[in-house]
Structures are given as structure tokens and as C-alpha cells.
Amino acid sequence: MARRLVDISMHLENDVVSDPHGFGPEIEYFTHQDTATDVVGYFPGLEVEDLPEGEGWAIEKIHLVTHNGTHLDAPYHFHSTMNKGERAITIDEVPLDWCFNPGVKLDFSSLEDGYVVTADDVEKELDRIGHDLQELEIVVINTAAGKAYGSDHYVSSGCGMGREATLYLLERGVRVTGTDAWSWDAPFVHTSDKYSESGNADLIWEGHKAGREIGYCHLEKLHNLEALPSDGFEIACFPVKIRGASAGWTRAVAIFNE
Image (tube, rainbow, N blue to C red; front, side, top):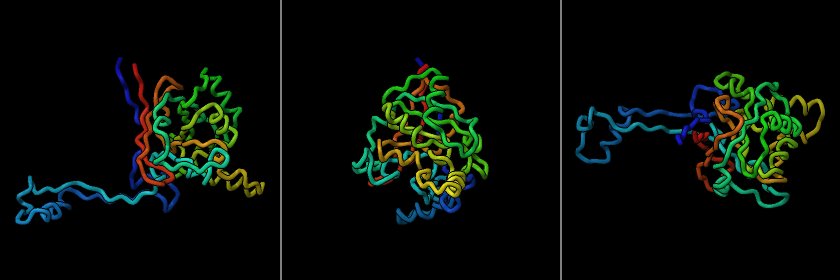
């Protein structure tokens, strides 16, 4: 049996819009030539020309938010409590056995930007692909944002998962979900319009806030979900261990045993 890995993570990079203005990553690159003098400074008497081809090390200095790039949100990001009153766990407390499990892909890429997916939508898509959800399966959502990555309108692209749709998954034992969009919820620009019309604050971040009732994590800004079938693979998405944090970056990978 051969193993095949599919990268479902996006790059951290300076020049692609993957976050709202002012919240993107900032990466400063230092070449081997830039750092040669730093290297020789550790060794009195050493000269730059003594180094192989006068080169030091390549390093990068990065200014990041924990929600830049492909990352796993902890329940603490959504609210201070989960499971109807328990203290919400932070990213360093997320059970590792949540983060490596069979994956299921739901294809909502044809839905319009800003659409809020319902429980009925989820049930119909599961029926279409012929899949019965199992406890701890990782459910990822392929939205229109997947193909919008790299464009200036990525952040406003894709549908979002509503409260009822999220709870539909959580009530069946799912504890990690994911999306290729900027947010698990519908993009804020669309929700803002709906809130302005209705004045209903329950519309704001409703998928995230479902974690108040059942604690869960979700992956945001996945990539390349178009390459995945509906099921028959595993997902590994272990987060970086940041004490007390609301999220951690991850190199999410789909694993096929063929």
C-alpha cells in the first residue's frame, strides 16, 4: 500500500491578500550575504571571506497574527466558555486525537458569496456523497473562496457555515471542521449588510459562536480542497503549541493510503 500526501495549506506570503487590510503577515527576508557578518561575529578572528563563498545563513523575521495563513482555531477564540459554561480550551490544550482523523469534504463551491449554509444543506450534501458522519471525522468545506485565493477579493469570497449547520456536525461527534475561506462564517461584508437590514445580532459570527454550546475547533484558509474526493482520506492538522493562545498555525495535509 502506497501513501500519498496532498498539501491543503496556503502559503504565508507578503504579496497575496489573505486577510483584511492591516492584518496580513509581514515577512522580512535575510539572505546568506545579509547575515555573513552576523555569523562571523560569534567567532573572534573569523572573517567573512573564511566562510564558504562568503555566505552566512538565510533567515526570516516574521510579524504574524495567530490567524494568518492556514491555522486551527481553538474554542477560546470563539468565546470564553464552551459546552454551555465550561472554560474554553486554548490551542495548547486541544486534544491531539482531534487533529488526525478521517476527512470528509462537502462541496459548497457553487453557492454564492455570503450565503449561510444551513443544516438542511449539510444533510443534503452528505446524502449526495453517500456518507454517514462518524465521531471525530474532520469535515472540510470547499467554497468559492478556494478558487478566489490570490485575488484581491479572496477575503469577501465564499459561503459561510451557520449556527444550525455547525451544530449539525458537532452533535454527530465532529470536533474539527475546516474551510478554504477566510472565515468559517460568511464573510463579514455580507453579514454586515444582513445585520443592517435586520438588526439581528445573532447573525454575527453565528457559526463560531456555536462553540459556546459544543466546544470544537476549525481550520481556516485551507487550500487545494478541489483536489480532494468526498471521503477516503485522512487529515493531519496539528497546531503549533502556543501557550494560552486562540489559534495555532498548521501545515494541514490530506493523507491517502492507496
